[in-house]
Amino acid sequence: MAGEAKTPAIPSYRSLAALREAARGCTACPLHEAATQTVFGEGPAHARLLLVGETPGDQEDRIGRPFVGPAGKLLDRCLAAAGIARDQAYVTNVVKHFKWTPRGKRRLHAKPNAMEIRACRPWLEAEIALVKPAMIVCLGATAAQALLGAQFRVTRRRGEFVPSPLARLVMATIHPSALLRAEPEQREAEIERFVADLKVAAAALEKA
Ligand code: URA
Image 1: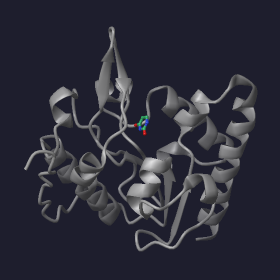
Image 2 (image 1 turned 30 degrees about the vertical axis):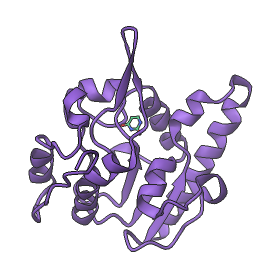
Image 3 (image 1 turned 180 degrees about the vertical axis):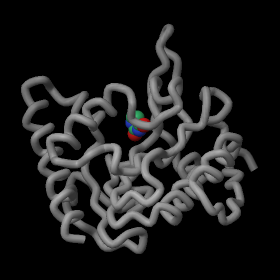
Image 4 (image 1 turned 90 degrees about the vertical axis):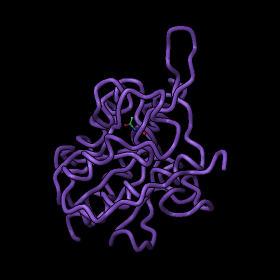
């Protein structure tokens, strides 16, 4: 049926390397057609913290790594300010192919739809099952709603731990792209709020 996700049946992969390799050929939704490559998660195999964003952006699509473009650089800066070493975290996205629309020579990021999120979900579930993080931090509404339910509102519950079978500690906060879009006069205050959320995560992770 048109618009239906051909969700891949993911056998129980024993390692992230095998899972990553399998995801390279994913055609479960049409996004693979216009993307350069699958942008799989990266980080220590048993990271205690798993960060999940929405979809790779233009630079992530070209380079093949999550959060390496402008939003990723800001994320790195904020993680460092909160005392979290990025290389100790497993960083991934809900959807693993870049979704874009052309604007002249530029490729503008587009939001994944419910079918694309559903099609990609088995990869994220398998990553979580293999990494077994003590804490998951959802970056933005797409990640939060994909993992915590469509009714979840980041605006109301950011920085709060919410019960979830996915990990002992699960929290959502805003996406670093929202900080890049913030009005210049509000940006630093918004960055500080984001860092404050990450500090709450860091403190809880230390005790977990
Ligand atoms: N935004 C995301 O959600 N993920 C990335 O990897 C880059 C930008």
